[in-house]
Image 1 (cartoon, rainbow, N blue to C red):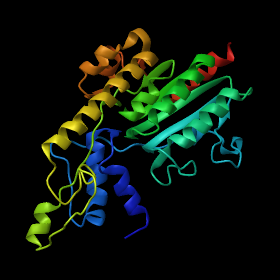
Image 2 (cartoon, rainbow, N blue to C red; image 1 turned 120 degrees about the horizontal axis):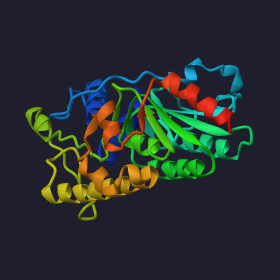
Image 3 (spheres, one colour; image 1 turned 90 degrees about the horizontal axis):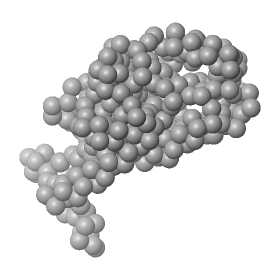
Length: 298
């Protein structure tokens, strides 16, 4: 087993995620046979289109970047910070070659752009189904501070769901393509129950623990209802905080009550704009060009 697989399993299973369920199913289908020894899926979840990484920043002159992984391209005073792929808490060194972006790296770029006098504005390029809850609220707060000081625009190249939408909502404006996706304002925990498979294989696992709740949610026995209830209460709290943060970022465009009323649904472009999840439809490249011109006129 690859050394990365235990980490992937730890990131996906038994921890709160702010990720679009369809993409979570895609991830589990990909890693399930290698991590769990059998295919794994989430009932009722339909996958959404794969992201296209670096639509905007990929066309910029990479010579503008320093040797630091935390650097960002700057064109006409506009920095581009990419929010791509699955979002994880730590690992500022990772990038789209790993299919992940870390909140640690994003916060470094956000703070650098906020303090960088050569940066007059920031375009946040978003194409992500979301990811970990841990670290996303702190990153959203950092982006909100940046937006309070400098013009920001979140430009969706395809998808901004769950944690990725939380980040996008902290920009002053959100532009998305007509057939892009936004929303999934909620949280999920995935649990894998091996008990039936172990029984059929003639394997019995005995857990010896000190502390009544030490082995709650373990994968070797069915999930107890009281554990389900506690996890659901935790997720409801995350969703409430998520909606409140979105409301702070979106202002009158999307209230916390309206965010909760979406029931974590994902919306395509026109409906997302009509509901206040985004401000306008537009081609990502054209939106970036218009933003640069706007900044130049200031």
